[in-house]
Image (cartoon, rainbow, N blue to C red; front, side, top):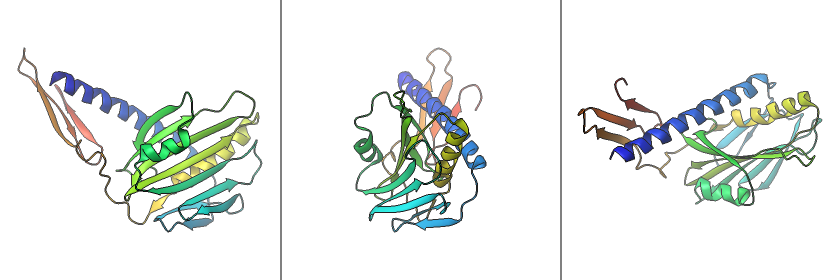
Amino acid sequence: MKNTVKRFFTVALCVAMAVSLASCGKGKNAGDAAGSDAVYASPDGWSVSYDEKLFTVNEEDEHTTSFVYQGDSAGTNMVSIRYVAGNMPEEAMSEITEGWEGQERTEGFFPGTDDKWGYWRQLVSSDDGSGYGETVIGGEYNGGALVFDVVSHKGKDEEQNMTVSDYLAMIIDSVKYEDFGPQTMFAYYPGTYNSIDADTGATYSVVLNEDHYGKFSFQDE
């Protein structure tokens, strides 16, 4: 039991750090980006705002829409949003990231929510001169997975790179949902996990809530 509780403590602390880092990055991008003047609404129940003077919208199929940046940049920069019915996030994301090497993975609250969980996989910009980078965000969504795929190319102009990054982030940060149903893939996790110290008799506990928040109880709460 003590080892089980320790594992829960470790996992919860790592998740808390990932959420904190993700929130800091998203806040900066949202604050720096300019306002949007168009809204795209998907039949899958999500919508985003974007600057129609700077983005071309392509409906690749009935469940996939891409927003391609048309301003000055080092290469292709775009956000694709896809709903994959019947698949969970890991499976849907692996279709894109299967061939990646050295990817970075984090977790946190899914874009546009403060109570749904999401997963990030990042392929950092290449060193081969192309400046290519890609980030995939996936989350369980209404019987399937909703996946954001961000493709970017960075050049030597750092100000230009930041501007493009802000506009791409602005699209993701603006997402809204008509009806985001409960996520069920980890429904068995919420609960209270206790351990009693054999020497002192002290009780240590972790409370995991359905909204992904929780509470540690050691000497203090």
